[in-house]
Image (cartoon, rainbow, N blue to C red; front, side):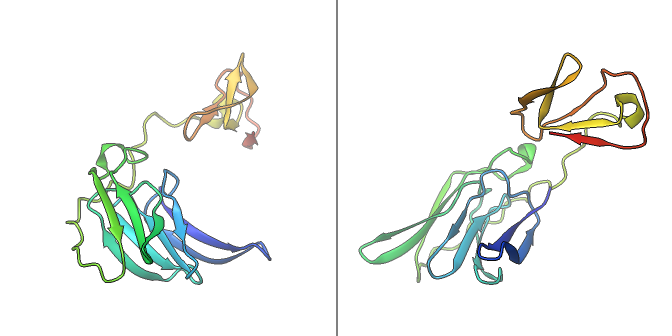
Length: 182
């Protein structure tokens, strides 16, 4: 349940830098980069981060008061540059533990508004439901992003979030391996 930002050099297809973050970043946390090599990204704990796009170093952090699950935007008015972000919180993937709110923040250089109070952080680890599955009981097969149709792996991709199906329709036939399909 953790995430990060990875910068890839498109001319070499190699990772230039990586910044690990404590929260999942796959639920609406868009990234804004600017021509001056600033990278903005919000987090479920309410922090809006500004990173150096060249090396991932954190330059600035602002507490918005609610989980940020939207992409920051940049715009200009009368020659003044702004960065704005909506902080409203979300229940994905943190259930009801992510801080909720209704905040629209707009920033400019030299602004004087104070940050919001820090809300309680979201619970990072969600409880696991269901019991363990013995691989031999499901023909040692785990299928990712596919559904089962008539006891067979279907051709249709699952649209469910974090989809995974365990084939428990076949008779046990332990092979000592896990087959990943899809």
